[in-house]
Length: 447
Image 1 (cartoon, one colour):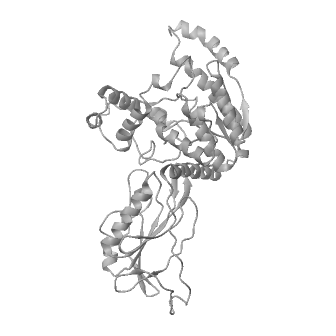
Image 2 (tube, helix red, strand yellow):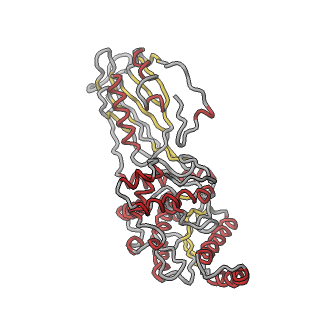
Image 3 (cartoon, rainbow, N blue to C red):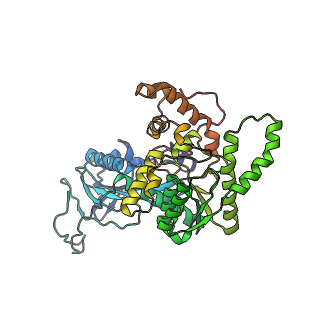
């Protein structure tokens, strides 16, 4: 079976086999199949079991999303029970572009019980002894003896614990970032530190991925940046032990406004608005890309899934960069991850987590002036993007009709922005990009 949905394009590169092979190894009938072969009931597993297989070895490059490990284990337990076989599930580990492979290889007995499990997000060698006979197979409780085992002692079963939810997601971000940088040849990163929670989380992930000595933070305050935010950025850098550059953008901002004053007036641009606000973000984008170009550093962008979904980001401004670490992390989860990381070691200033989020592009600006509360927004994004529910279905779940229609409209019209964004770690069941391929030019209205 070849998966051809979501991030999978197997039919472009492979042809499905037409035989369910069973091999005899040491007198034991062992079936080998690949990934999708075991996810759905029926062939080839059924055919292999009918041919006498006592062990099914399933080989995977199964990409991660939050909670997928539990989904896998539940499915594998069912297959073991379906066919009365041992299931040995082996999975790739590491990052590849936006995908993370979380490892966590495991062995399940014919009753569906977990017998052994390797660590997640790291290479591991898992050895487990099983006893297979024509009778119901059982986990070996006594030392192996005889010619097959070579009189070797029992291997003590090892079942590594799965990390808690926030720890699991955080480790996926670290793994994806570390491997993307390593495989693309970048040794240093630059993070624009605004004093906000998104850039703080990205900086911490970067430090955990490649070390503080390889991370540079830069603060670029404007006339609208609060003293508290500037201090928060500096405190974060100090806590992490990263180099911190401070480059005020006021001279460039003033020059841009002066330069554009004439054309804006001549064309009847009216009062100041979003265009003037976004000049600040684009100045910052120019600065970080100049440093990237000069020193060969990669810029890690700091936008989250809530922002990418609604277009609450500036094209060629804060979207500038080479890798978007939290691109698939909803804003509400950003806060949970920050709390989790601080529980391991307090590095993100408490004021960063507790203050209302703001782009600080105009006086008194708050995110909630432009967006619904993040708890509401993220719930709608999850239903519309990740679960493919329509507007009517989401409204029927109890959400305000006007809010749902507004959010869905923002998601639909901002596909053009997302197409121009850097790749980033996938941690949800459906991320923007390869998971969700929709046209930019369209007339539908998300119903």
